Image 1: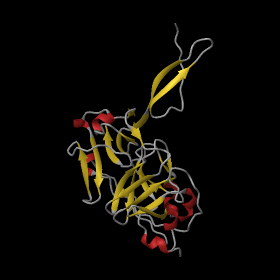
Image 2: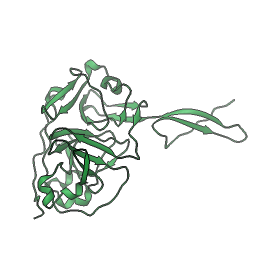
Image 3: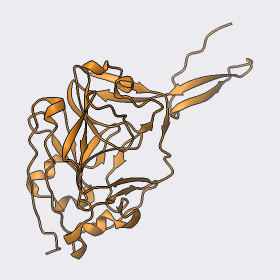
Image 4: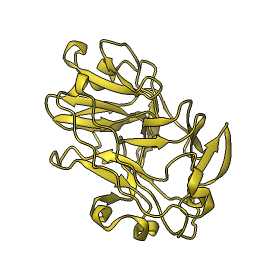
Length: 276
């Protein structure tokens, strides 16, 4: 009788069966759980969970007592915040949440099911206005305008790249960028999520604040310009040719009721929308 130790990589989320063999010993199998880690910083954070959980209660997911936990989601129709635990709600993949945490910690998830990686993910919104969405993938989500579809009334009407400039940019169903919150820079926390292939269309004053992707576990503000619109995230990558111009609106402030002082938005920067 003996013991074997090994570092395992490439495990899928949830249950995995690992079979090991050494020398003349008979192969042996063991069940190993693949986990996903949500890294929480101390203080304010905009986050998401990319897993459909059997019990999505925030206190159970994050491993903190409900009485000491404040998590907020944004209601675009009411233009107001809904704050847990005052209002009970569950954490859902594709949706973003603001939370304030007393100290850094890691919430490790092994239950539930991630969304299928080989299928597109649709993030549709009933009402126009600012929405908090979340990266629905276990890993990094590159924000590629030529790969992300625009949803209108449940159908894809084109790619985000088509709405960056020209006549279609004058009536965008959704904006082609997101805003994320960088908790490591409280003095200027917002970063613009935008396709680096289109960087020349971002005002010079904002280019240093551009990031190309949504990170794992990261939430973001999205501006939806018409009811029943949203994004269709691809299952596989395709490339496109950059357009010409973009208009950028700064996100709303963080919630006062759940996180203390509201954070100022980065303002609004404008360039030509009609390709002039």
